[in-house]
Length: 249
Image (cartoon, rainbow, N blue to C red; front, top):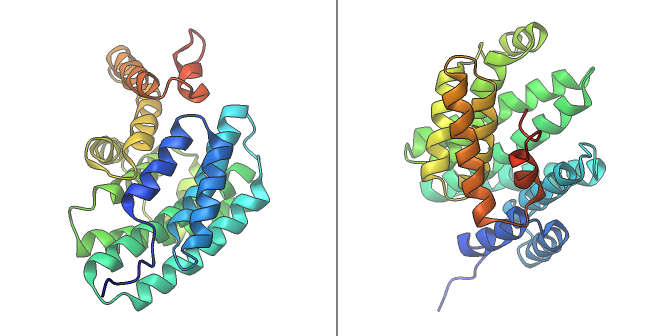
């Protein structure tokens, strides 16, 4: 007798991500909402539903788009992923649960940081929870390439952030970050990741633009990276905007 499927398959999740990166954000949100109904104990559809809304906000130039809905989805994803970590009976299942737990915490940290002010402390706490979850995942499976995107983004962001943000990170035990390690981790996620490959390439391109040493070569590499993404997803307004003469920061 076949085992009951309790979580969305990688193919199902990747199909929804193609909707996100293809610029069909409303369709992606509906798709992941239906997956969440189909798999009520699975954190992944909720985390990716939040991702769809975040990308829609980015396309519309509205960083606070559907912020309350995003927060609710991520809170649910954290709870479900934490439960899956606790109940997993195999390391492979625990690694996947830890990845989605870290992903949900990472998105929550992003949302809190955008709010600024007192939310910076929440952002740092969520970043610490993300860091801990993904380091646990890597300790169980060093080949977890998807784990490298959030960890690399954290490394880079803290190294390049304000003095206050670095101070808070040190207070809660996260250290000072490492920009070059962050770049390398995100690059590898873009090459080897399953669920993070597209987003890692997008993040990597934006990181390159912020680097002064070798700025010309890095800017050209960033444009090539996003041009490849735009060729694959021609309806993605975010990628197209980046490639406009005034689109790159």
